Length: 131
Image 1 (cartoon, rainbow, N blue to C red):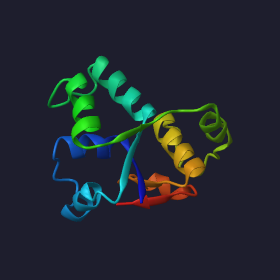
Image 2 (cartoon, rainbow, N blue to C red; image 1 turned 135 degrees about the vertical axis):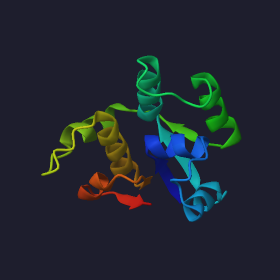
Image 3 (cartoon, rainbow, N blue to C red; image 1 turned 90 degrees about the horizontal axis):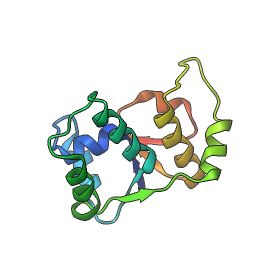
Image 4 (cartoon, rainbow, N blue to C red; image 1 turned 30 degrees about the vertical axis):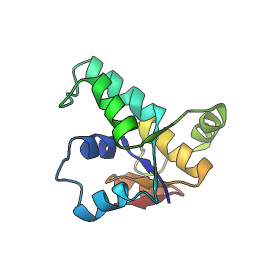
């Protein structure tokens, strides 16, 4: 299964946060599954760490290196087709406007990926969400 991790899931996985269930951690560590992270999430973390809104348990550089090398997470680039899908995404009653979440949704729609997220706002869109 190809799994696109929401930003908070990436952070929680890397920092062994107990908010991730043992079952979900097992799924994420199953070598049969491909773990993907949007470059948008990498950018979001850089922005939030850079302005002091977020602190990681390690340096940003070490965080990325560990995610890619030790966890085998593949970075999913943002393409012009992802941006077109982003543009076409509807706004629902929830008025979900978070640009990083909307890019994750756009990439999941375009690439047929399952999103791993605790965020129920994703359920309003035509994506599979695992939690």
